[in-house]
Amino acid sequence: MIPGLIGTEGAGMALSEGIDGDDIRSARAAAGLTQVQAAAVVHTSFSNWQNWEQGRFRITAALFELFLLKTGQFTLQKTVPAAENTVLRLRLRSGRVTEMTIKRDVLKEITAAVTA
Image 1 (cartoon, rainbow, N blue to C red):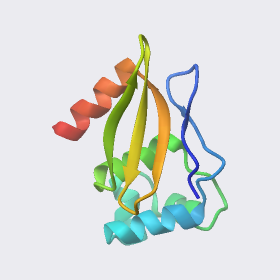
Image 2 (image 1 turned 90 degrees about the horizontal axis):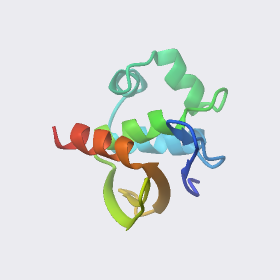
Image 3 (image 1 turned 180 degrees about the vertical axis):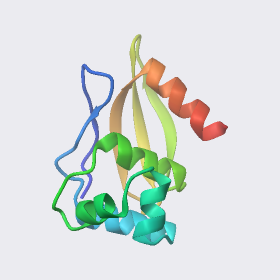
């Protein structure tokens, strides 16, 4: 289960304890992709993807978010603006909602990538 993605002081997102192999497998299945195709979406190897789904290794939140964005499995909804950070509510295609805090400059990059 994905309880939320938590912003960090660094230039990325901290991996939520809740992203597990079942979530990754479900996201891939919802996209209608094989493991090889899913790996190609985020520019990684088949073996990496397989290890994430089997729980041998953890996927980073940034890479999982990228996969969800590129496969259209959630929409970005800006909910609470702040000077440097923005809280986003993400509605996954499965219906689950999660929130994350993201730095303004990173949000601009994501928005540009999604709308390009």
